[in-house]
Length: 76
Image (tube, rainbow, N blue to C red; front, side, top):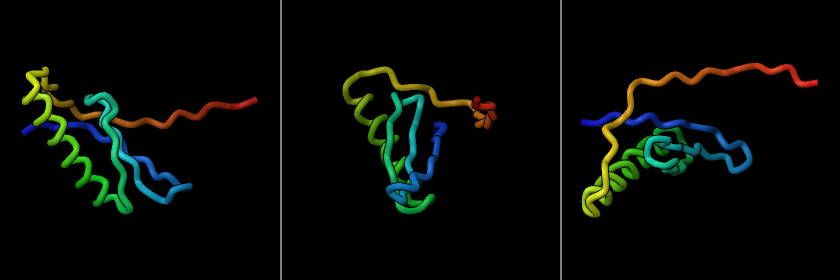
């Protein structure tokens, strides 16, 4: 089993969750709910890994645990 970090962002304009997988070239998908976008992310990651293996491309080993930090910046 491999672990990949998935960044989830709520798109208020389109009212969907958007997911990005940085290790896989920014692979992206979306869903109406958080659970839906996570399931679609699993499917997209699996598809990416299967296609890479079929084409003989290097498959990333996966990611270590990551942390998302918010940084506040004073804007003039």
